[in-house]
Length: 385
Image (cartoon, rainbow, N blue to C red; front, top):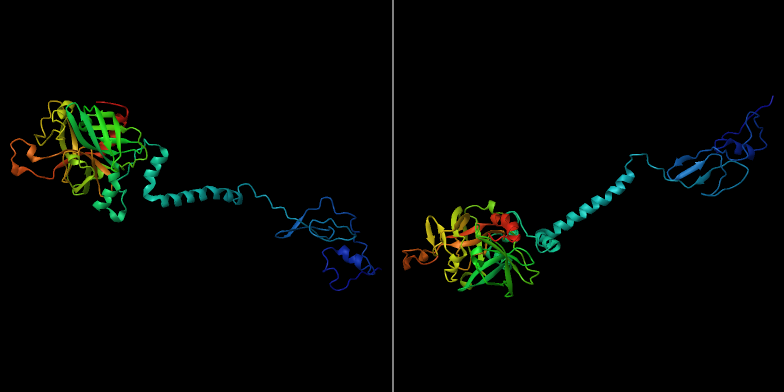
């Protein structure tokens, strides 16, 4: 009887018992053990034993990627091929998703850095016919300077112009508000009504000729366009529905031809019914002195409005207004345009007044800016109603 035996730990040090048997040829061989195969089994599958390492059982021992030969078993270390993720797994999807999220984050950072300059930058990029608008919560001036008249004047004065119209019987002077960098300007209809030519002077002293684009006598509004203008600073049109009695306001215009004049006050009332003439000849009858006729409280001021009139709801302010302020800007504490100044009360111009009534009484009226914004499309279309 053949006795089989092994030394203690003889086979534990080998992964393949055949190799141990070959190296210890003096030891008896158990006939029940099959001889080792001459070649690696064709269907052998790799076995992963550690991250980054794959082995072939029974393969010749060699360096990674080597073929090796030899007469015994061993382990061939092969380069590991990354396993393909199962359908629906996250790794690849997460990698792809980082692109859009990173882009959004970058856009958010840039937007935050731009801050208050967004409206003007957007207008410059998208064209000169884009009007800069904002809600009453937006500040054209720094928030720390909100309500500061000097800061408001510095920010908005470049957007207010002097408008001089040549009439058949003289000249008239008014004001206007730049709404696009290409030279669109909103003013009162009565400032340019019947004008044979129009000259506009900007805050920096440059002069342009202008033509009427459209008029709306029922709202006492007109849109004019400068010739050859570019790079102008447009005003930001606010939201007049948010205006409250007692709000601080600033008026900028050219009273008596004194361009760039700044006055301040408060909103003293809202929704005042102001009646103006829709007949262009009524203004011309005043000889171009700028005292445009209007009606308020059942009385007429600055002359006769005639039989053809229209009434609109106005913002009442105690900021000092004088002839030449018509068509200029009424501005809120944040630097946004909330109205177009259109009429001013002067006791000395009413019938039966005496010299003791002369002087500023702090009663002016402005067309709400929301009315202006709603009428822009009509004005731009060339309407001359």
